[in-house]
Image (cartoon, rainbow, N blue to C red; front, side):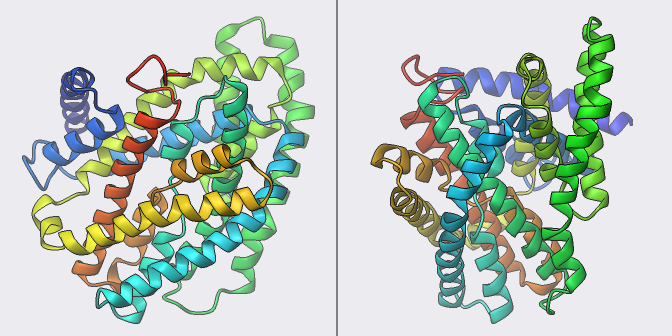
Length: 384
């Protein structure tokens, strides 16, 4: 406990200083958190050692983020978004998988390493994509719906990818398929029933107490997320379902704004943790491989999404914006690397890790300096 307290105290004190410097230097705060984590982490100054607690606390930020996103998306809009997103996700996944697999072979990886590289290429970052979406402007609600629909469907594919990697490449069992495609609908039904017959009756009786309202929403988020994880789905998907089940209410919008500071606290931890996973010395030894993987990713993903989304009927401006907002590898890539660690060489693993962090950095720069977002450095682009 003393070690965690020391870590948190040092981290937030120095993060505040670094964030101030970053604001004067006109740098996105996400970049500041990642770079500071790298500098203070076990592979550089070593002031902060490896901490699973920081990783897990950061994970809570992702859960809150998806819950708040769900609160903004009533079920009728969700159906339309998913219907439009399925084809885009399927076709783009084939393209990204092929690009990642081909690059893996080009870099001299064996077939298993190339397969893992391809899987890491499939997904875009939920946390970067959603964190940088304005939720108030009408146009950006549409952009947000498209981004979120694509990311949630990618999360389902990510669960399959993790199951495949964990099985060491063996065929996925029928039970695993059931977990991915059979359990989520049951969670949706259960959450809808629970919200109607348990959550809202209690809220109507006691919602005059603000603290109780806050705790009920928080407990609902974590409760549904826990049930989802216990049934073999991810915490993130469970939290999103929890939010959607409450979305058809004015109360939900008010509570969402009170949860955002709590969400931001945990997200700082997540980005800081990403920085602590980077070993600058070892990363330098695979710099050209990581750089090539990152370059291909940030070039091909916006292009593929732009044309697929445009083909589905969206205008050119919206298609390009969604493409750039999804132009990075995902935090799921880090999880895939962790699960596949025993099946990959250190060189291959570091190259994919480095590429993932680089794409998050580059994509954050592109979005923060070119599109409207909540953490923009100019008044023209800053929209909450």
